[in-house]
Length: 158
Image (cartoon, rainbow, N blue to C red; front, side):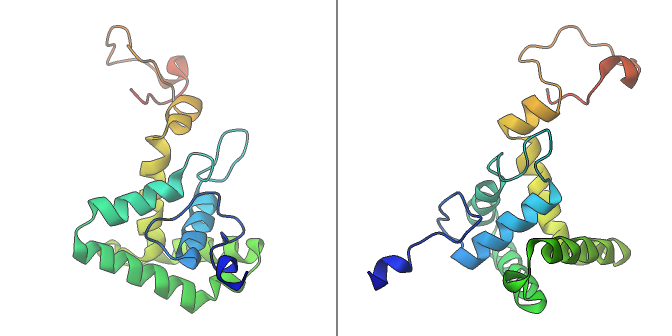
C-alpha cells in the first residue's frame, strides 16, 4: 500500500509525466494553465500543452538547454514556494514574475518567459488551439495578401 501511494498523480495533473518529477509536472501544468486558461475556448491543460513541454524539453532540447530549463523550473518552484500556494496566489506570482521578466534583459530568459514561449508554441500547434482558437482550413483557397483583418476574423493557423 505504501509503495503505490508514491505512484499517485499530483492533484491537477491529468497526464503521466515520463521525465518530470510529480512536482515539476504540477508546476509546469499550473503555469501553462495560468498563461492560457480555459475560457470559452480550451486552455493549455485541455490542449495537452504540459505533455508537449516535457516532450520538447527532453526530446528536442540540447542537454545544456534541458539542464537550464530544469534548473530554472526548480529555482522558480523553490524560491516561490509555488507548491504550497493556493491557485490565486500562484496566478499572482506568475503574473508578477512575467512583469518582472519583461522589464529585465530578454537574453536572460527567466523561467516564466521560457514557459510562455513553450506554452504558446504547444497550444497554437495543438488541434484545439489551431481549430478552436485560430482559423483553420485544411486546404485554403486562393491567396489574397491584402485583406483587412475585419473581413478575415481570426488569424490563420494554415
